[in-house]
Length: 120
Length: 108
Image 1 (cartoon, chains in turn orange, brown):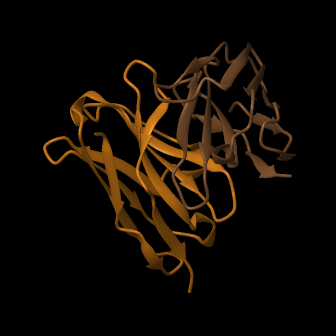
Image 2: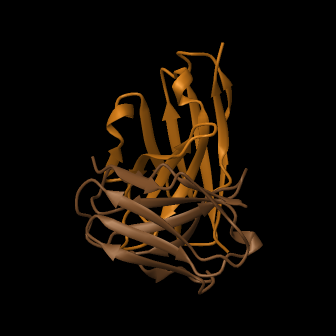
C-alpha cells in the first residue's frame, strides 16, 4: 500500500524557516516524480514544487521561487521542502503527492498533510 | 500559466440526483485534465484522469468528458458519500500545474 507521511509543520514567526519532510513507503520511491501541494485554510489547492526521480529536474510555482527549496533523498525514501522567509500567506496544509509514472503532474497518491502556521 | 475556472462554486443536490460540474481552461490543455474530490480534513483523492479515465476503485457513476478548454464531471446518481468538494486540475505542461477553485457539493 502506498503511504506518504508528512511531518515538520508547526507554528513559525514571520520571516522564519521550516523544513517539511515526507516519508514514502509501499512503492519504489526512486521511480517517481514527487510534488508538494498546499491548501490555505478554507481555500483551494495550489501546486508548489516538484522534483524528478533522480533530483535532476526541479520546478516551482513562480510566486515561491527563491524562498522554497524542494529536495529528495532516495536512500531514505523521502522528499523535503525547505521554506524560508515565511509569510502569513504561507499558512496552509502542505501535502506531498506522488506523480503517476509517465503522467507528469497527475497526483495519484497524497499524504495526510502537515499544517504550517505563520504568525507572531 | 493556465487558469482553471470551475462552475458552479457551490451545488446543492439530493441523493439520487444527476449532477454536472464544469471546468474551463484559459487555453487548450488537450485531454490533460484530472478531477479530485476532497472531504473536510482529508487529502484530495484522484477520481478521473485524462479527462475521462476512471481511477481504479472509483464507482462507475462518475464520468468525465471534454477536450481542449471545456470539461465536465458528471455524477449519474448521487450517493451520500459523494458530498464533498471537487477540484479539476490541468497537467498539460510540465509546470505549473493548476487547479480550479473547487465546487462544494452540498446536500439539499
